Image 1 (cartoon, each protein chain N blue to C red):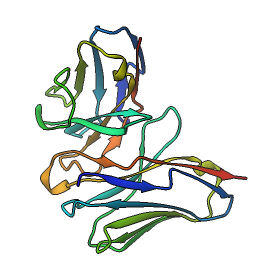
Image 2: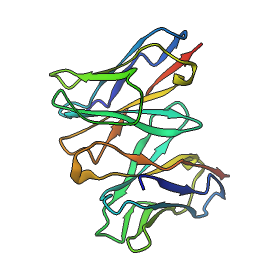
Image 3: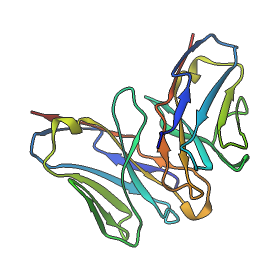
Length: 114
Length: 112
């Protein structure tokens, strides 16, 4: 019940296309859902996050869609650029419990071809 | 504002040795969490400290331990190293709420 399942494992998109990464969770106690971007040799960087009382959040080219009833959320990268090539992780946390315990998906390696 | 810093960036140890990793959080951040990242298991939570107290611990053996100092800096220690401990160890800091966590660059530990 603590798992977060992420798909696909890898993704290849042409420059200018839309990249879509999906995640699903079981634990309805999760109340904060961040996405992280990680480049080789670097730590994960917080990209965008959403709470379950919101169905969509947009920041620049990045959009999170959240479906509370289906317990699913997804990251959309619009107008994908070669510089977006990285590994993306979705995560979930019971923030209200103050545990500091992010549960991560397995990651998606995105390659944007020029 | 400076980000999370971790030292050292790279470490090579042999089986049976012990190692101490250090993390300095973003100024003003009081919560520090540690994670282990491996290709097989992904990112896994080790423990979280707030105001020098461990608030939560992940599913790792007792060989993994940590502490936090009064200036919020944190260390983690791994004793009796095993080959399987080879990983990228990441530290993340946040303000009092642990939701928004900011990661450091990690310490790459190789156990031979």
